[in-house]
Image 1 (cartoon, rainbow, N blue to C red):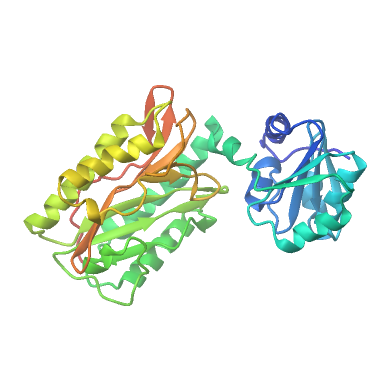
Image 2: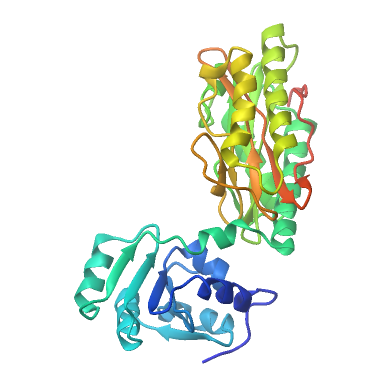
Length: 368
């Protein structure tokens, strides 16, 4: 069965790229729902894509029959069943597979046991195969524009809520809710993650939850937020001031910005993710704050807000044109304050395109 693909969705090209990575004799089972959406355009809570070097099947249940038919293209067959894993195993048997590649991050023991009970003797099960992830990491021009649009929406919401309205005298939770509502009013289908609004010493927690605590004057406030638009996420952090800053707070903010600058200058096709991280980390360490930067420098962003490639001490990534990554050094001083500044950048043929548009310095914001 075939039909028209989702409007503007490059299903055929993505399936072709995936099939090229599947060895002859193998069936790859793609079970992560974000991967299924990226491959087919189908937004669902229950689906698998089974792929061989020559064929592909979209396997889902009766709830998604109509939606699934609308995303089919030539070479993608539809299977409507109650038992997705069982049908995938039957397809592997029917096509004489020698291997089943479980390209599903959350393959359960029950799924594996079911496969073992249905697959013909001699078919090898290979868990943890990551076939779609490297394909998703390199964005097309259309995907980059989708992420840029999500970031522009988020920037507009920040400008309205933080820069124009002011935040002094409001609670962290009130500001977080207002920021989310401002993004949704502009068309965001969701938020990329729960916004972080963290004033003063609370900002020393890299992933602080907003509190019912009033934001004071003359302090730093870490704000991390993102919008999801047409499936794609944005991600940005700014650390703003609510008045006059002492020399220590201003110095730390400047160090973080310089640490970000050296990384931005180094990002280009062929750059090593570990080496880029090391540049920022060395600058912060040389300034005497190395013990207070404990997370990676950045991560990929796309249909999920945390994707490959990563920029970190453990990164094995070599950056490619089309990657989109965050660059977010930070310094977190317990019981004092925190500073993080985050840019969202696309790797271009000769460097980067910065997708965020907001000022990076410790902008002074007013009262609500």
